[in-house]
Image 1: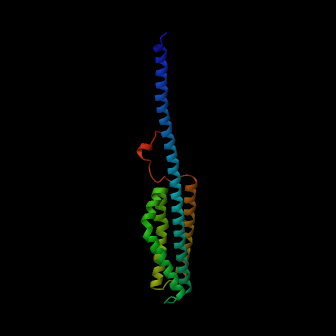
Image 2: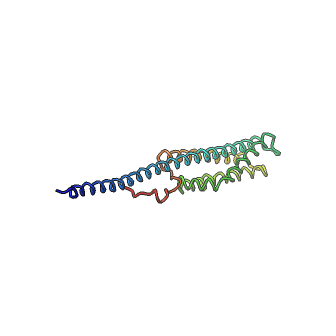
Image 3: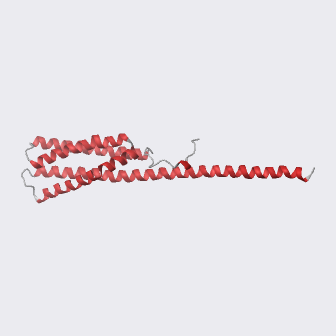
Length: 197
């Protein structure tokens, strides 16, 4: 046997091992990076969903409480002009109403992105519609205090239903986050994508 015939299989084996091993290493490294990226992306999505929940939940509670304070003022002060305390309740209500309206499209878009269409529609169509109708009733009573005791009680009942809607909504958002049903913020860039296995 010549040295060349013995050396050829060793060289070919070495080249195949090096090339195939290198390609396999690159493939496995890319899969690892892709998996790590997807895990980080999901964690970032959860973090953003939690931040959105906290911000929106506080804003909902603040608006509800300011509406209640204004309602309590109207029940207490049937005559106008409002007392200094009543004027402060109105001012606080106006402030949170501006904050709500200044961020409504942003909040709805973020809800759509992180929690889906159903949660966005629930906030806009159910909770938002109830808030608007109660707000209109409160503002009408401010403009011309003519509501009967029964009318004011109905506004109070609607505020109670609104509080229940907000509570259930908060619980549902928490359940979605705990169940991993929030959407990551973006799709991975094309060079990170791997086929599902």
